[in-house]
Length: 316
Length: 291
Image 1 (tube, rainbow over the protein chains, first blue to last red):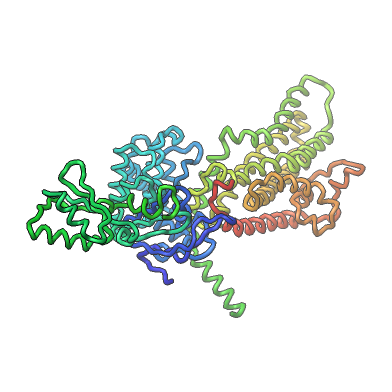
Image 2 (cartoon, chains in turn purple, cyan):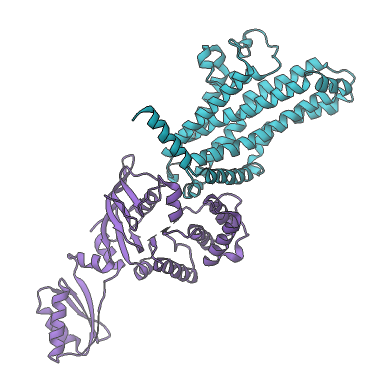
């Protein structure tokens, strides 16, 4: 596979810890934007991120980040920032030093490193407490100072392992806004998270993982369309839900039509959303019911995650 | 590819390297590591290893002022030689280097902080050199100061006679030899322990085996003795210890070499082990759960 200088490419990546599988035969490439890695604990998300950043080496395959590999550390780590899940810090360090000294290792002089440190602290909302020892920080503050370090050198690829853990709702919203702003600048943001609703809202694409395998990958809507086995849920708010439900039942691909307790909505589960849309158009144009709103009810990461992986974490 | 082409390629590759960046990165690594390791409560053991003989000699210095009986300069010169050659070279510097140099990488694995240094644009070889230099500065500063203090305390109590021995006799030359040998001991043991920490998850057992090897190396053939740090140090010591009987085998020099060869040989051994460490660090992965 030829390395692309815009993409992140996983080329047949496998990682084994002795006989234990980390990830197996991972093949995909990522365009700039926000990509979410979703999967239960032990599914291989952190392994994939550690492989991406060279903290561990693949047993097979190769990874290219903007055409670079971790074996070229000087060029590679100028492009990549990684906020890991490891909640540990160099003993005795304060927030400011934690960001400043790695910047000096990047080759920045004192003035430039100071400027970038202050900027990163501001962006992460940590400027006020920067001179305090990290050991005295709350979990949310430690999370934010790690994020500040990862973005301080203005990387083109930002890798974030569970970045929203431990953050209060305000800090979480601010972090998400920061990720979106970074992604809008044409950068790669790769996030692993268990907070599926937030991932769903901000992701351009999703990689679903289970037991070391990538079970689905792509834009959320595309992935949902690929899950043919599971009927799609469509919520229709209309003037006569009973009439719509009985019409829907005449179609083979409709497996359920349930009138909701508000008496104004019907939830239809269908194996062919396009055919159901055609039926809906016919009914509306015939003037049988008035439709106020139509919306997919399970077109989100959470539903896809449940369909594909199941609640126990094993592939469905 | 011919040898000439290989050499030309290697030369051009060396010229293309960002040497100024490497130098600045090494300087930053040394500063942060020294600050983190030299004056912290956790490192009090290394200070004790260095300063215990000084404390004894200081007590002896104070005590001897109130007692008329005193030993001769010659006797105390042997006492100093024993402290340096037996205590410092075989125990004090050995164990302090074990603690300092194995902690540089393995300690960071235990503390789960090594990944921060693997996620910056620093070549792994630069990381090895930077950390080694930091460890060398810490250990050399600590033990040079301790050896110097021992030397001063030994001869200060002899007053004018002691000053004459130091400034007009062999004293200063002996001090120079001890300081040189101390620095080389720190570098040699340091390089060995750095490599061991990259080879083994728990370097204590290989460290104990190394202590055994350094002790029994004199009974092995000459070529094998060249792989021991104490072999080179012995040739740099200006005073031969008056040990007799079977124990003399540990102090006897079977095949004397010049001080220049001893210094050069130990430096070569240190560089060779550091080069090995540069290869070993590429195998290192951040798997804290396996620690």
